[in-house]
Image 1 (cartoon, one colour):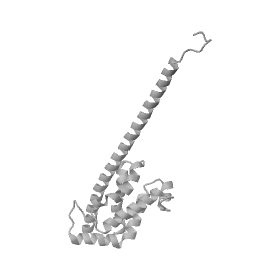
Image 2: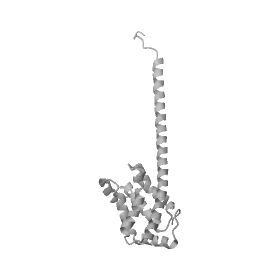
Image 3: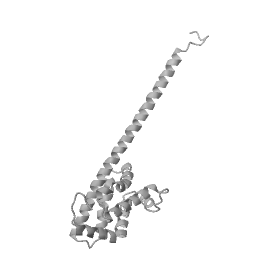
Image 4: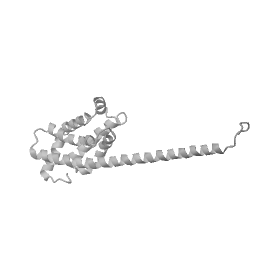
Length: 190
């Protein structure tokens, strides 16, 4: 399951079984915690109708969380969940969140697990911590790539605007030069 951290096979199996058995409770709590990071007015809208067209942000968040959870539940290495992380990170990257706030949803999985699986032993919690930490590292990579994409888009937009301004200035200058070259009208005394 993990790439950076070694988990014994029996512990990995115990973790995936727990994730599977407690799926509805943990995933429900995780979604609730993530949606609660938005202002109250937005939070209720985002978490209600998760229609792709009526509520694309809520849909992207809910679907992304479900896909990440499903990946972890089926034993996929957290580093292989880049596409699923991208669903959420792209949304949060363009919103008014600091990088730590944008990625806090990963740590909220750990909190949701601890709240919903209170009978977990220390070994299972360490396994969850390792899984969570590796997922966070993958999310940081995705966030950095998204931020780089945003900077590139902004740079291209700035180049386009500058080009258009230069072209407008050239046209305006050419117009002024053309006006200066016109002969003076008769009867104006010039």
